[in-house]
Length: 341
Image (cartoon, rainbow, N blue to C red; front, side, top):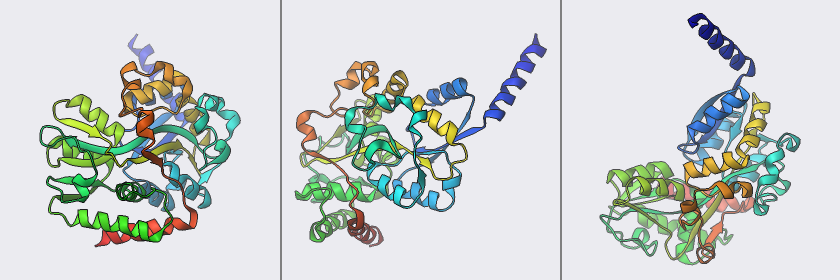
């Protein structure tokens, strides 16, 4: 019997070797490991995962050779046009992704990628403030960071999201093309950075971890990171979107231009867009699903949680970040100044 089991193990290993490997380059804490195991079991591909904490880090790695090392990346919506223009990604073969039909209508023909030629939506959500509810009150305004802060805080290490929040605080659009408004937002961040309570810039997960550990009282994070932390430490952690509003985002699945295994990448995209798989993903991540067919399988408490699915009133105070073409340089220049001073 042991010999039979040993031979079965050898045959399974050979089958996986023949199928090859799927390499994901993805945000940290952004996929249920059980889904990777299920994909391997169903299709026979080993899955290897490398992590990043910002869109800028992801693009830098692609430009340094990662474009031929990874099969799937998960960029935010406003980076999609740049990835296409830089020829870092390849068009999708939609005939191999029949589950694209499951996406909600607002994600089927996004302005950043008309017709989903290069991308398929993965998750969507918001930014906001995670806070230590045992130390500070729920923050009604971004002023707790930008106007005489009184407790340790962490800012998000993401240019458009952090500048976008400063713009909302000032009453401007997160997509303004007015240089004076973007510069004013930069000054807001510089003032916050000079506070003795400023602890640095972190990715969303890093900021969340510092609040949970008690090093910080506030951190700018993605909502799913905060929701998971609040579930684990309900007496310690809370999440709020201040009254001025914040940014919305959609992360998508894209295939690098010289991906070593595009067949596996297409199969994985189609797998994620299965209704029950999409629901399992969002039930794990605690982000909203763009998969309309998955909504029926989302945990009922999450469907009613405004931190995951914002109310219609809250949505009026939230803005998607758009690619601004040549005007992106305004934000790049101001962000560079903020980080370097």
